[in-house]
Length: 303
Image (cartoon, rainbow, N blue to C red; front, side, top):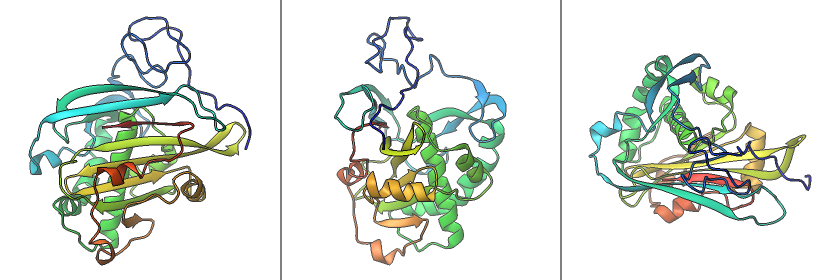
């Protein structure tokens, strides 16, 4: 473990959105609140697909899947998407955090991201949505079924796909290209852990939080162990996804960064029975407690 600062992403001297001179210590533009370290001045319409890497026109990808809107009512309500960034990254001292919020009125499952091509979106991603749909709907309706290995695999891959969409929405894509390629090819990649829990009610449908934390554990020269923690709710069920570079590094991150944080029922890499976890009920505080307890070097987005 080295006593040195982690290099931050490039910080432009002028805001690429409005042109105002920027303060190197502030991660957001003082005038337009643009995310200086992770944002783009406008939504790109084409580029490399995050899965197949082919340069193509991007397709609108619904974060949860468009099919959810057909089954659950459009409960339009006020939503808040918050981004937070540390002033600097140090492991040996607390540092100030800066946050900006975007408020709007949306339905729970209306969010879209632009990061995949039409071929992936309408091909393997659509097939995965169909494979997982029936089980996700049972869980969302408050049921708690036993799962076959095939069902567990489909739901776990679906949860990872949704989590990657939230990473893109938070402008901090950290899953590796290998993990995304394995997901596209039909297998659950290494370095992933999925758990689920039953909510007390459906009032937090669509709620989500995506947070990444760099731990003071050097993986190789100047690069530190990173873990990503994402939770999201679909009606009566909450999903929690944790990812890192591989299984061994994830185990280290779980021990020293997330301290074993999980929801009551594990889906991946082991499948726990429904009977053992049926009585547990969660609220929003239980979900927020999942996120990294360390603050140095962490950043995230919450909706």
